[in-house]
Length: 239
Figure 1 (cartoon, one colour):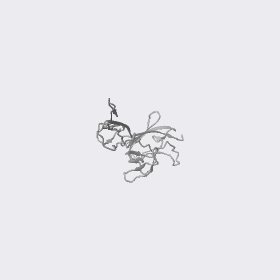
Figure 2 (cartoon, one colour):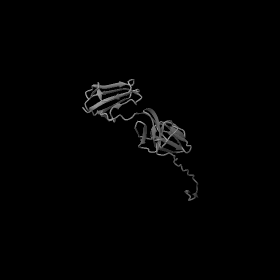
Figure 3 (cartoon, helix red, strand yellow):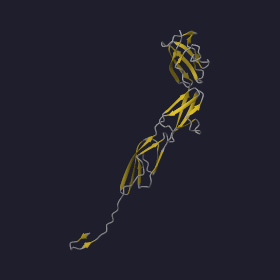
Figure 4 (cartoon, helix red, strand yellow):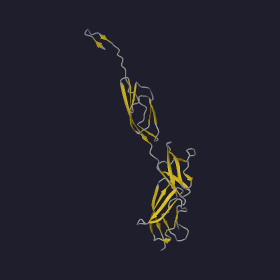
């Protein structure tokens, strides 16, 4: 209302236009599988769109974990939304092998499915001979990890060559890709050495056909792929 000097009233209608801040249909956090892309799409068109990676379209794909934002503008109002992208954590894969069966335990995702061909899933154990195999693990989130595992029967921690047929010898003939085996005493003296051409690969706790004193001996097993397995074995001999 405007009142003039002559006390006359004049009424004007003034249009008021309210600019609402635009809303953005994005979460604050996202998770994705490693080495995959996260696809995000805004719920509508805006006058201007600017993502933190420089893109200006409604839909983007994000491949790298990190902090991101999108800034949008409608008429005179501008809104910015920050969000974080994470990779799902790696699976914690434990396994045991008894010489015939490998059994898996995924400690941080009990619903993980396992396969050797990515066709047949949902196995937790496989009957396999010693050797190198590729396994695929599908998490409950649908992420797939692959892992190459060389499985071999646990090397015994001791031998006792007393003729009872139990742990009398160290027999490594079952390791198909064994290249060499070397055993030394605590002074570094060479006690036993064989390569893959000298089957069977068996140590009976002797050196030059003579009994060795009861003690710990150290071995190095070299595989065809260059991997080395180091450890010790206790010899229990009746001297």
